[in-house]
Image (tube, rainbow, N blue to C red; front, top):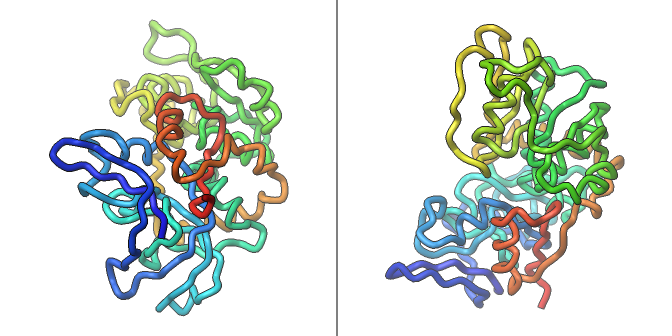
Length: 327
């Protein structure tokens, strides 16, 4: 099969399309014929020299994929089932979705709702899954519809989809972005309004004005710190990004004087129950979303290197789809 392989040996990084054999890591692995994959920031990190994310010297990249089950030992996921595959060590320590076929454990394979095609599943991808998981976490915290919800990094994969899903569910997403030229596009996706990267006032004070009842942060670092100090009493931020920084410098004041919450969002080891809940929620809003408008572009395996550069540079607008079967 054709696959995009990342290999680092003797401190030399090489990557490109190869013809390889697909082999299961365990006899119970499902075999899925991949229709589409997508480019995530994590994929770009895996393909970097001396990567701290990639755990093996050589592997097929791609942390997610969608297609049809070809071989299965799992009664709930028989051959012919349309599925999405993501999570665990897929694309990090074992072969991933940048290939025509992928082997994966059943716990990382989820049957798709009827309303979501395999193409749409990868427009959604890990990014969109994280977006909806974030929204559900805020709702579990008591978030009420009809209020403004801040979304940082709004022009990226997670942020742009969070804007669309929030709007579809009856919230008023406020899109924060450093890319002013994406304002019309974000408004079309459902943004109530678009702002720059300044999300809190009173920079010299411990606490800012109570502004946001809830937020989805895809940036991390100083942005996350500013969100915490500007949440309303009882508010919460669902955090999933570290594009700006993995460091968080803040105080306990937002937590002990405004009773705010920092909700960590992880899509990698999400339980099967969480996966089913999130994909079901995505299926419920699918009819209200123009998914094709969330596609930055579609690429072949041979075009992945330039796609990684664009993702690292933050120049994408939405999701880069990967078609592993395109010659």
